[in-house]
Image (cartoon, rainbow, N blue to C red):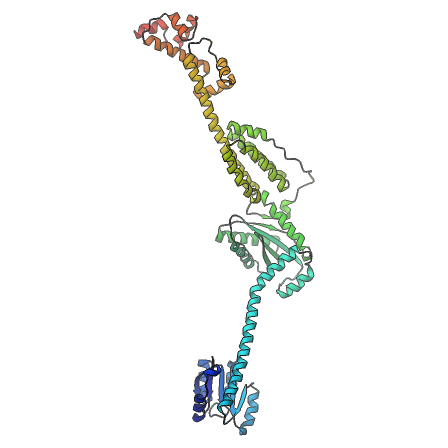
Length: 516
């Protein structure tokens, strides 16, 4: 509904028009009446009508003065002026203020309705046009950021885009670049993240770079194009500020690749440069700023093959020697970091060594380790690869150590059992036991000493003397020669007596007398 204010100094005309017109039927609402311009102007300021129907000749502030005052403050209010034949000069003055209609007094209901209907129609058309323009403007404002993003994507990937396209879209997007020298910044978010995080990186960058930049998301990366206006030190400071601000709010780190400065016509080459730089995140680690200087090969050294033999590492893991295996692995990763081969070649070497390591564990564990590998191949840095491989290698090595310890303990217990049951055999030797259990006698002797703290021969002698003491303490009356033979000394009675005295401090005869 359009609001109408009716103004006339003659009450009869005022009341007549107010009562005879079906305001609602023509899409209007009568919000008030006034009998002079001063009163009408106060209502205008308070109610803001859309249409004013006013007489031209009124005391105080007449219709033309009201028209002028309203037009100055509220130019969109429409006017229908009521005039007589003798007031034609007034009508000419009113035309200067773009009056919508002039009605000659006296006016019929039909004439007023017809004029109002025409004014309402025009206002609706204007409102519709304004609404259409506003909707177009709103749509453009919403589409503009996406259009800018798409333009940047095309600029760095489409061979047909060049300086001409830049000039056209630069004007369209009002890009205030004063030169053709630009740099590209490619940013990757470390860790699990959502699309809103990419959007946040773009907004932070726009806030921190006070000159024009273009930004876009390409896959999991944010790409920024900026004019080369800052010194390298200032540029590095701004990039570090992006990283620290993002870390503050999202607790996620950023890795960035910065191109060298170049002409707009070379922007695709600059983009390729940033991709190459970002790939070297594999060697340089997460949370770094990588430039062409960081990845350039120093000198003219010819690329060498990676020299690492996994046999020693596998042997150390099998043996359960983690300290030595850890040193070998550290050396391997240090060499990879130093040589900086093609990243795919380095990953291939790591995978080969990884496979050698996990072959040493049980099939179920091997499958678990293999299931973790794809994500590391795709996203890991050399440092995180090292942590991953070292963790699994340590787990397998310590498991091997425990298993070896158990085997050694079982082997030593088996040797002890043989000695305990066959101590009377004067031919019982470490070699003889080793032959029976199919093991190396030197290895058995070493493991026996490690497990028990004493040599095998000392243990055998100790068992034989203990058995002799048990015989004497039981009161079995047998000769010393017989006792020596029973406990494994054969017919060498003097040697038995000598060993017995060394262990107990007494000869066999003295010990028998003291215990009786």
